Image: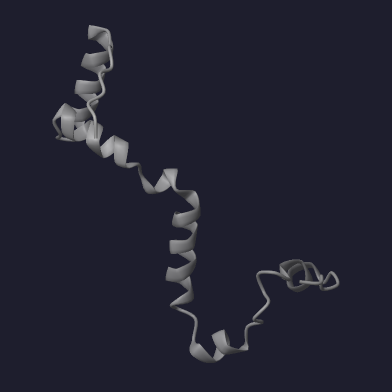
Length: 86
């Protein structure tokens, strides 16, 4: 990966140093962490993890009785609308 140079004012650079220090990181480590992203920036993955965690708590007999087309036919199961053709 190549090196990228970003020109900042001293005030901007100091603000970034302060944010890094508040997390106990060097500026370089803080920027690397920032570049990796956070779960909040990956909402679909975060939502999938929440669903999977919650599904683990459902007893097997209840999970087995759940409709297999629940995702594609959610309007039918939630609102009682007619099923759509898949």
